[in-house]
Length: 111
Length: 113
Image 1 (cartoon, rainbow over the protein chains, first blue to last red):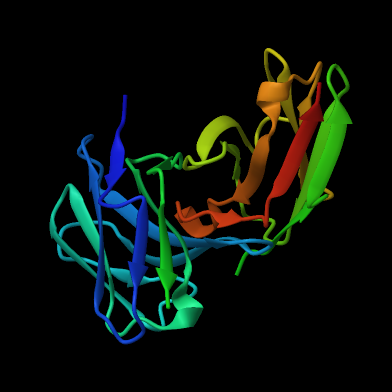
Image 2: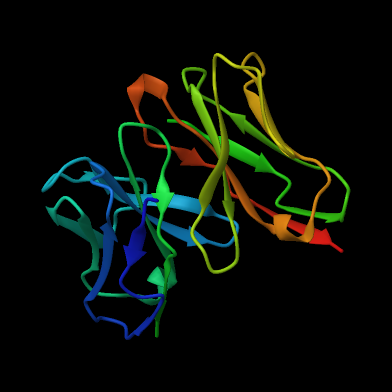
């Protein structure tokens, strides 16, 4: 079974803090993704990566950056957290197919 | 780019009834249409998918239909059970060879015992 894990289930941070969300997959997938999920807005793509050290902007990259130093790990970075970044963050991975495997999500609250 | 509309946003049914969720897409070149189920406290999980060369696909109590001409696809759940209660997302991808899905906004299905 593919397993995608995220470093925290719940996180509370203060405005202006630098926040790291980590994602690890154990199936040697090339592609990894970060989404945010907000009620009524569905899943919106922040960034994705199709290889180590490669990254591409998704639909809503502003205020975020990513890092992929190893194939199994994809990190989402909030350089200076703001209250409008309070959300559920979902990581996903995929191989050479269209199916995505999601982690359990990190609910981030910025106060 | 692709745009996916999903309806309804909330669906409430009695146990044993059928449930239908509908999605439309805008890019006629999309060729892969998955459905994901997200249970409370979990990430979405693929439950069924369909490719554009197929009109219908079934897996036990769930089925998906695709109408390429009208650019819409639907998820059908028969004999609903309380454990079917979840948020369901449709998605479309494949245009230009892209594997990046565009998701609908989700449908919250509530099955009352």
